[in-house]
Length: 250
Ligand code: ADP
Image 1 (cartoon, rainbow, N blue to C red):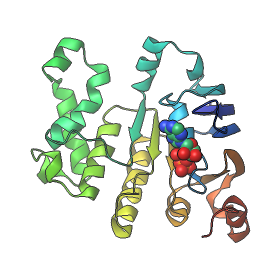
Image 2 (image 1 turned 90 degrees about the vertical axis):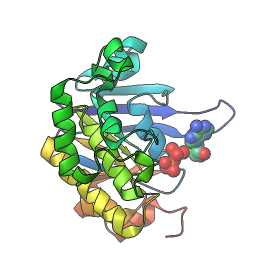
Image 3 (image 1 turned 120 degrees about the vertical axis):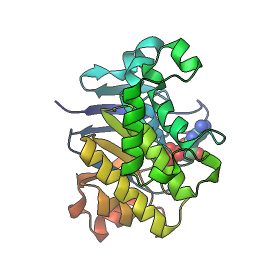
Image 4 (image 1 turned 30 degrees about the vertical axis):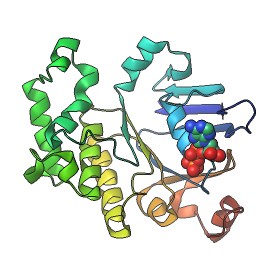
């Protein structure tokens, strides 16, 4: 079964403004690390956010492991979002909370209200958080506050927080745009490695073409809300990039 089957997806923020996604279709396979590339404003972030309905599509279908996400009511949507981990551009950490608590907050979707109110987590969650923090290289930072960390370290917390959800899909939205080039590469490498180890199919919006081609197995090229390319990363050549970025000077 495909992890995602996206058909004819359309999105528009305001009626008076142009459509942002103009009928985009593609599939995501269970072993895919799919990079979405394209000029700024092409609709990459909107596409990612339509998958878990942070942005409501105006029409089209998003089938996630056989379930049509666009048809779910609020309660069903909340439930299915447990299985969709997200890594954000701005990290979205709670600044005054510890690294450990930030990671554990990824489990909140599974915890009952009373437990979550007191931030009481099962031992298994704490064990998993420690394991993930070790694997992202943050063992020595478990009790540090999020606001004491560097950008790269903060995104590592973001990676651990997404994976502690035991996601069946990882959505990654410009994970490196607030980081310098060296750290960006490290972070992309880490997301790739962790998603492989955890066996999580990944959809990644990444503006940097070189990083996209280095770490993904497949690429989708978006231009002005339209899919211009869909194929293996190794097939992306200069001509393909010129087509996708026709309106942007590289
Ligand atoms: P990309 O990720 O490719 O840079 P986005 O999906 O962020 O593109 O944006 C696509 C278009 O939608 C842009 O024209 C942007 O200005 C517009 N847009 C994005 N988010 C919003 C929003 N919350 N409200 C209104 N317009 C938006």
